[in-house]
Length: 219
Image (cartoon, rainbow, N blue to C red; front, side, top):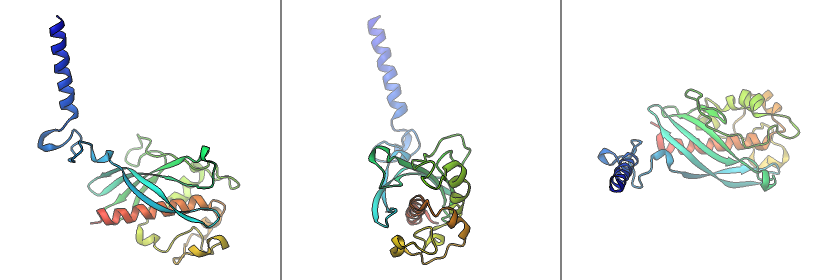
């Protein structure tokens, strides 16, 4: 009986190894082919984006692509970043943004910090910034999700070229980063004047990812 039990255990273990290992043609169980037997969406690519703080200091910060998956017409991404460098470390959480970007036009099709864009069944992002933003009271659900993020959706790298900050008339601390492209939505600029670090981060993260996308996927 003991021998039969051990034999059964060996067979079960072998079956699990086969299910989790390489399939036909050297592919793994998720249909992706790479040397380390990990699905392509489990690898991480490290980018950096130019973070601009509220004092006008620009520092390049890590921006890992946590998830990258190519569909027929677009690419799905999850990227992580720290949106503020002046908070206490004990509350300086990372944000996770979910993007879908077109392969043909290079435009942002979806940008969210909550549910995924395909069917909304999965939590694909996390808002790690202050919520609400101090002094302004802006929240993710009632403000950024409703009007600022939709301003970014539909734009590609050409549309954001020359936009470094969310101001047309730069405050003195941002004078070195004056835009060379005018933003048409002046009312939106005024509404987010007290949330500059957050708006700057979203613009700069988007531009960094769009540049990466253009280099790797544009048809």
